Image (cartoon, rainbow, N blue to C red):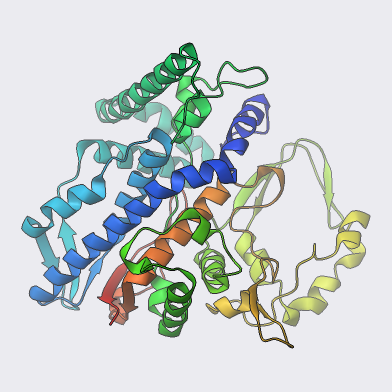
Length: 435
């Protein structure tokens, strides 16, 4: 959907997808996400035990997050996980291990065939988004005729179409019996609305994309006090031994009980800059700060630069442009948001916390400053509620289970590669169970 122009096809996607991001449907998706997070905890326990037994001190979790993403995507969209994490857990004991001179460990686990096909297609999408448009077009047109691409594409499409056909048949059978179909996945939620008055359907090829969340553990690893504060809050806010069970939707949607979790998630999204920029194309001439931009011009908006510069220290520079702003822009001002008071190059969840001076009560302030990780306006990410929910579930589950201790500085760089999104080059962790 991100790559579609704002035409009838995009509007149709948006109309169908928007209702699926409501609390009703997000709640039905939560058990699958939470269970995936619990299995990830089991995998990390096994990995760390093997790492220590072989003389290492940390391991790369890059593949683990890819497994989590694939399992989450297939659970949410198809109603059945691909189970790449359980597969990894089942073969971890006999896996090949590489340990470098710094103690960093990499597990070489055989991949499931369908996982390999999905990763291959994701990498092809990444090439299309990072290469110049003309070169990307030629490469994509050439690639689609190669045996490798055709094989991986067919394997994935056949797998998805099988679920689409089964789901549509289940909906038809339920309607024939006068029963209500209870959807537990994205395809089911779309299919149960198909054919109803006022509802639109998606073609089969349109049911195969959307939403993935990528967790970054670097900021937590480098901030032990943040981990401790978050752990204490979760233990107090969540009842019945939350460290030994899946978290629930209601627990993850209670910012009044877990303001620091909300702050940590918002700060990770702000600092990670996973989607560092977006581009738009003008459909008519527009005036921007006194400059007229003609129709058909591509405009790149580096959201993280704009948000990082929205600080009290830069206020005079920002206000100097007011005479060039439109009347509506001057009227709306900061849009109800404050300028950041502390440096934006630091990971600081506390910037999102408001403290009542009389009672000392701490609350999460979602409009504390400028941060738009999912974009703004009509073209903002349609699945942002799902992405944030996933992020909260994984961060809460991992924090309840582990303290992420420091890894060697040689393995903790913040270098990243731009693919579909911004992906870190190094993702080593050293999880330690809380005492």
